[in-house]
Length: 324
Image 1 (tube, rainbow, N blue to C red):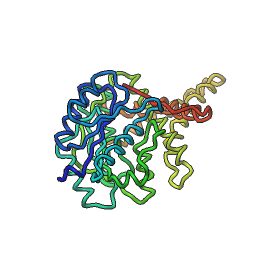
Image 2: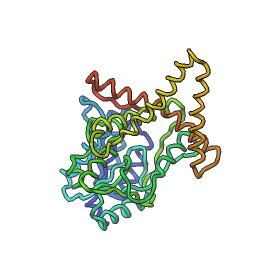
Image 3: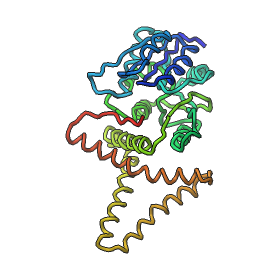
Image 4: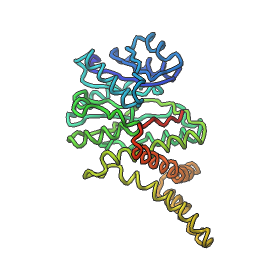
């Protein structure tokens, strides 16, 4: 593998020991590594410099987003190393698997119609909390052609240049949105059946899970606002669905004040949970819990959609929704 053709962009803030593991995993594979730091107050910048990676302190006078951090990273790399043909993006709380870059580069080299290749991201401690296990399931996406990728992926440099990378103002959902634009340009995305990264979600509280779901709703709404009127109606359904479920719940509650008998219609919620559970191959207690939380997630997602609407009406800057 010609390592000079691959660059690595790491983004993070206050990742501590997780960043050290991330740096060590990438530097063993590739010397063209840049770490973009977003105002860390721990030793992240020092640790990155000590590792030998190039370090950029993101300009925090502008609204922060992971999208802007990633753009800053890959644009720096192609100026410093114009020979780079592929960029591996990785979050600072992840660790790159040993064989990933070779497998991913080989795929893109042999399949020129593909812009992006991603693999299996796994949670480092999936059994630590129920929420970590939810994340691990979320990362277990179908193998084959895909509509989008997550934050960890190997991407052709020319494709990043073609669509000008991520949209800086996307404070959530920036990766699928860029994938959407690439697909409009007839590029394809592939999910390899290979181990890619280890991730440490470290979600230990319900409130963290709630904020993460809230961020998803915001991402759906922002994506629908940007591309919802186009042929694919991108993310329109995902943005409307939580509003419908949440709206139905509160409408029933309000109407039941006048006719308590209407409370029986709230049974649509447990019935929907049962319906989802019966469709799952996993009939364990965990499978039932995942369906329950999927239904509950509609409420924070709806709040995220509403938050996007309010910020748009007031012409406010979009701000990141942190759950760690």
